[in-house]
Length: 73
Image 1 (cartoon, helix red, strand yellow):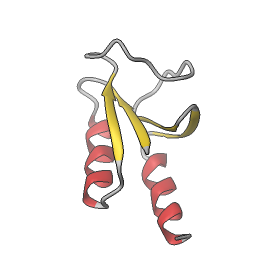
Image 2 (cartoon, helix red, strand yellow):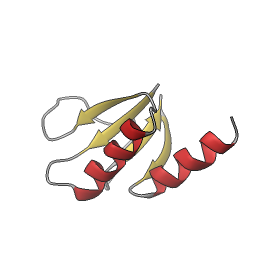
Image 3 (spheres, one colour):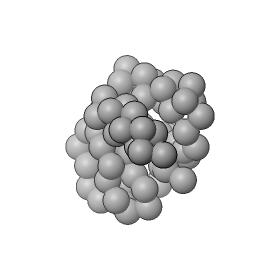
Image 4 (tube, helix red, strand yellow):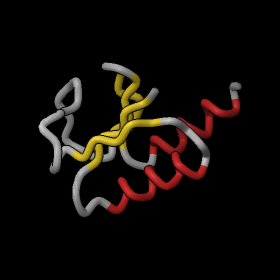
């Protein structure tokens, strides 16, 4: 399962989250402004998608990653 790290007042975070939901991609959301949990590595941009400790993408790159991943299934 993926972990999506988001931040408050983040338009791209909302867009990526909606895309993942609409495409039935399982993920766990962590809002870094509301949680003591932080990403496994230091990051400076949100949203950020991880598979365990591996960073898969930032921002709208997450949508492109998910589209490519679904094409390979």
